[in-house]
Image (tube, rainbow, N blue to C red; front, side, top):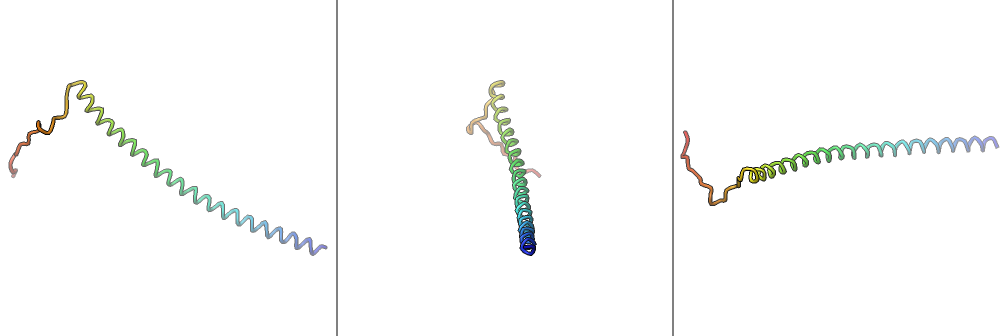
Amino acid sequence: MRLGLILLLLFLNLGSAIAVVTVRHENRLAFIEWQERQDSKNVLQDEWGRLLLERATWNGENSIAEEAGNRFGMAAPDASEIVMIDLGERD
């Protein structure tokens, strides 16, 4: 009877140790995956910031052209209105 109890406790202890090792390993894998996702999130946030800056730049250029047309009556010349001047070779 006593030997059976000792064997039972030994197997329970061994099972508990295996469970601890398994859970710690899974936790490490989950943490590594979390870190990779954080890195990916940071890269995507950087790209999003660059895209917002680019959009603001494009909107700024369009709004400048629109404001010049509205406020000052300016417009981009047609291709037929553009005159090219040959300055010759410079030394």
